[in-house]
Length: 82
Image (cartoon, rainbow, N blue to C red; front, side, top):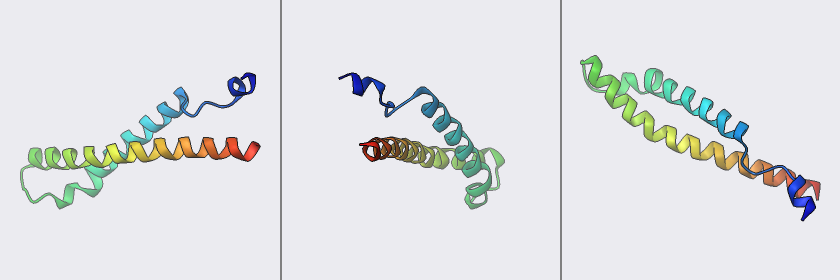
């Protein structure tokens, strides 16, 4: 049991913070750069709303993927030690 306490946790506060920063950058990139030209509207407000809503869904998937990658990486490093 003492060995389990010394191991690196699967989820850390630093990891969550890094994932949030990456997800915010991904959201802004997708909403303002990638999706904005694909909205079929001339109204700037409508373009921002539609690109933001689509980017929000993609950002959720990105956040899940980064968390799953981080947990898988930590688990792989644990099994590599043993």
